[in-house]
Length: 364
Image 1 (cartoon, helix red, strand yellow):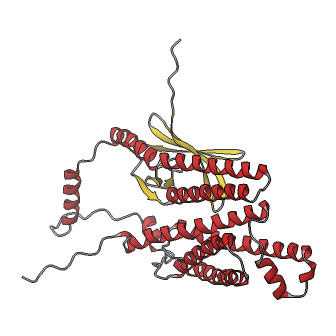
Image 2: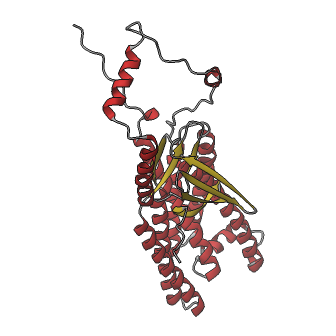
């Protein structure tokens, strides 16, 4: 028997769309005979959105820094896990700890290789006359470009190829019609005019340095944590407390300054991630100090003695404490370096996304 031809062809991979830090739904994209089908699955419900080739106006691809951030995080995780494996062997930890750290280092290196082969990430969106929809399955730039080339052929078959010369001539005729006494272009509908008359929220360009200070403090926290592996002392512990206070002030200031600005979504998410990292370190610090006070009753009531006793300990004294310390180090590094990279890309973009106006012509 002849095999039945498939009606739909999958584009990209099935992807979970994240809302904040929570994965809200699974998105999959399918190419049909005359339309593009987006399937959104939310636990116990499934919805469908169809974009017919005759109605598609634009397909935009914007390269993002998420792939680079993922690569940096995986590379750092692999290096730290390798160092933790060597520490487990040097300090004669339980053999299971060395095996677990070595396996984590190997898996991180494999994930880094796969992420590098898949290439950079992008944000893909499709626009029609009535909506603009984000296509989450087209997350990698390579697959998004292949899908865009395939869709372009289908769209041109449905709408016809757009000749550049004809489009330029039509635009010139419309602009010259009122000056030549011709009929001006039709006015927009009243509903569209009323929609444009509504006040839009003001989005101010971001010009401050609060986020740069925040990410710089996080990188300083990474350097301080690395020093804790090789040396101790009360001075180093007091320096960590000072960095923590500076991080609190910088996080609060950055969250206040980013409200209604044109900062990228990645920078905003990393700033909220810094707040979560602060909460994590504060809760862990309270638990650790309480457990240390119970385990060392001779330092109870003497804050300076307790501080010196805690400074004499090392994060590598126990596997559990080392894992928490390494996790905090990774989170701080990802937020700090990722935030500086996203800010660097934002600073390079021109204000408003438009080129500067041309200079006026010289007088005759």
